[in-house]
Image (cartoon, rainbow, N blue to C red; front, side, top):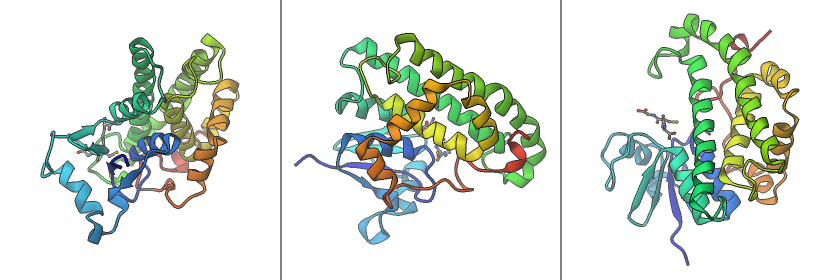
Length: 243
Ligand SMILES: N[C@@H](CCC(=O)N[C@@H](CS)C(=O)NCC(=O)O)C(=O)O
């Protein structure tokens, strides 16, 4: 039997770990979600923090999520999704197609950073309440300029080849990433997201297409799915959404 993958990610938030989980779930790849395992099984926050604090063995990483598989210790969400996608038929077979899919995943990573920075525009180490004035300045730009711009970009990608998914070959890790980003935007900025989505029907349809895939649907209904909350990247502060 194949060695299970090990995902190291903070247990209480969906965060960037969720992008990796969706790829593992769609691939039906066995994995241990180490941060969510009890301490007696070597899990929990301390196991994840070891990577963050540079106390873990293997290739140094900057920050979780981390994917461990045999001797490989890999960080950076987009790189992990790319690696898994290429191994599990969730990416095109040729190098050019794989690079294109990675570029899409990196664009999603850009969106994730910008969404996070709406509520933490000064520092991730300060409380929201200590940077609320700056957040209230930054967020309107994100919701009125950047959400529409990102959604319209993905609409153009889908229109470009006229298919059901972001790359012509079929479902890829980029579609799963976009699904999660759309779920997050809808959670955090429901009014702005609804408005921007009206102009991007292909993006809206892709989100539903991914949601209905049998393995994804089963995962979303399971306890393994980590719900959005006020500790994560996509937080709902109504004052940061459009009126
Ligand atoms: N570009 C990295 C960012 C990783 C990242 O910021 N991880 C967060 C959790 S989502 C973290 O633990 N950061 C700690 C740090 O930056 O020191 C990725 O996409 O994986």
